[in-house]
Length: 182
Length: 288
Image 1 (cartoon, rainbow over the protein chains, first blue to last red):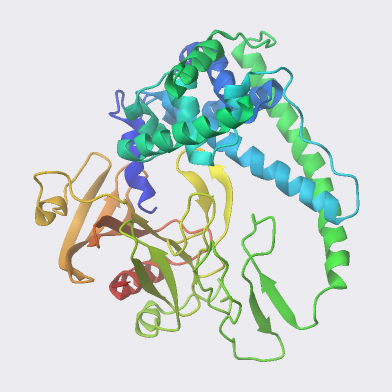
Image 2 (cartoon, rainbow over the protein chains, first blue to last red):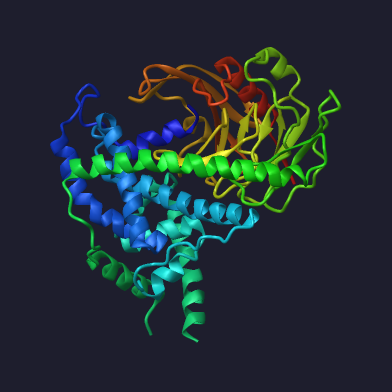
């Protein structure tokens, strides 16, 4: 339903195969091997935790596997996976906040969110303080080295919107990193 | 001096050269493991959730005035603007709670019984009970009449206020893997924040066209907020012929669209969703 249906066209691109054709597991395995690590890097840049990133990517691949008959017909299943990962990463941040809040209200000791297992450098720490959409754009552009048009497809917005997010993010990052350097 | 762009590209190079220490597994083995763990986690989460609900119920029981029903988006960490209704009064009262900075949507009071769908013709005729306000990219605002018994969303993450409508409080939950945040809305309104592509007239831009995924059955031309608009009745080829209706219009300098389809998490009949959609779109006006 809804207008979101129209975004399906841009995300899935041209269908290369007949909908009736359900590809075998060899293609899924190839996708898994090619994309698992790049996706973990994206998840890590977004969450700051390698363990969380791996969880998120595993979840994304599980969803991919469950819908493989459909996802395999897309000409860019990697774009589909990236969209799942950035959405799951956003959801995870909100879920942690909610869980901490709920536990606090019940008077129990809140569980601290897992810390990043290693220092990933000040840039990605600063990037994680950006608003959600700016953060996603920065991670996909600089971290995953994607073109703006691909990022627009993954984020479900116009290319101009991605450029605006990147522009605002660069300004904000300059300020944050300058303050950190003092 | 290093520019922020150079710094970012260097950080990106570092990230891409990082080899995360992952346990090497065959994909099929990994999928099986993830599945088993997810099932186990669901049981565990279910138990924790039940405990939390019980605990919160006890905790909230002592803090609420009796007789008031409080609703808010399910995913908000803090209580946002609320709709209160005195259960002792049979007639639903409009919201009297002041909106916060982040929200200009005004929920309509009563939650209808989804098992008793509203007559769509009634919806269209009585859609003047409450309004919500959204923002255009030129700084002006638009106002929409919310159909009776329906709700509009408050601003949430990157979802602006007054863009999702449902015959139940609009909630956003874990993001859908394809379309971003999932919600229970039956009618969605999107403003692109962009004008027309260069060299294209508005009439050309709203000309319905069939694609391999979705073909129009019929198109009606009219005006919304004084500008040309088109209402398309479409069949979605990708989901096996599901029906949906989409409006395309120009609002201020923004291209906009609004749509309703047959798949409803609220159990809303397709005809009711379409009637609400038509009512909402026809009520749009620009202010300021």
